[in-house]
Length: 141
Image 1 (cartoon, rainbow, N blue to C red):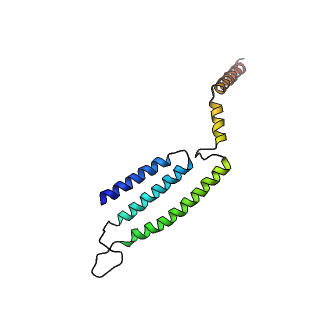
Image 2: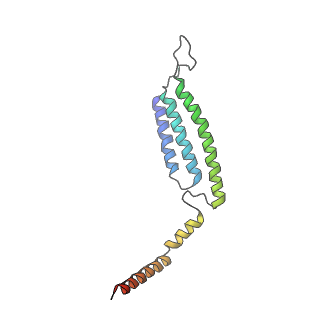
Image 3: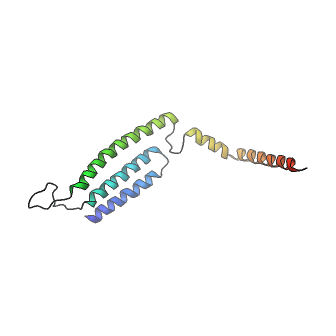
């Protein structure tokens, strides 16, 4: 049982980190959600995995620790609220910027591509050489 839970936590953490490294907003939101599920499962497993123990204390029956269960329940509610907020924020950013890229809008990317084009590089090299030549003329007596 413990091996299955540990493997599940590791798999969800790995997938969450992989999705966090994507450049679109939706995979990042799903990655954050997967990471929060992995943390919730870890907190739940930290209380001990006893299938025959109850949370309601009885005089004769062994009981499980209710604190991790309460923490996980609270974390689920907070995680759901934060996921809803991030989804709304991503939708608003998509509507305002016209792109759902994490690192900027499509217009900014077009400007970067334009700056990196071979023609722009030639122009910048010429202007740099021209500036160096002007400074050399100014420094000569």
